[in-house]
Length: 322
Ligand code: SER
Image (cartoon, rainbow, N blue to C red; front, side, top):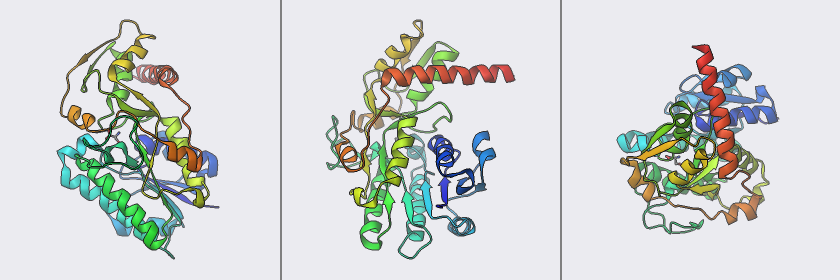
């Protein structure tokens, strides 16, 4: 039986990915790791370790201790936060990846690695609509530069050392279990909380800024599908384009208004507007579809309906506990 570790298990993706991996492969076979405690569900359903990814020795110790053969490395600093702390973001995002790739070199401890890339690898000179898998990539954010460099390292370690590393370029991820932090696409999560709490939201992007997004259940299923695919099908070892739902803040607000007619949004773009404008509006994911059968299930309407229902449940629960 494989032994998996999710590094970054208290984050937006990690909290849900850990639970789904435990469902599929058994609670004791999936170790959760993070620099801080994770959600109640994650902490109480299986093993948990405090890990600082900057501490390579400790990382290796945990991997040996639990006989880990697969890693999902999710710890990273997102685009907005990275702009405020460029050097720290670069160090965190790069060092953690290189440490893990080294542990996965032939004959090493690890047999398989998942590392997420992002739509941030694209830049202002990239074609914005239906952005192809292979195209001009001149990222203008520190986060994007670290993801672009990371993709190169992944492909390099695959070609040179035979490391079975797999990756997708996540779009903005929308979820209700754990909030994102420090990203440019975070407005698409915050908006649901504010719609329910106060009926109004001040958006940090302009109303017509389209960005590629995806509902978390699609992202989790796609990630595990890629990791479980026959290695021969994984033809791209940098990172796969993955498309979900593309929309603007105005379109999302319109969809929420169908459920909450009095909901209003005002627009006050900040530094993240420029980041958003440098990213694609929509993504061509035909390689992921052809190579390992990726498909997206949720659309704007179905995602919005579930988000409103689940965020409301969560906020009601907070009210009851108070
Ligand atoms: N959601 C991320 C961000 O906004 C993009 O990968 O930084």
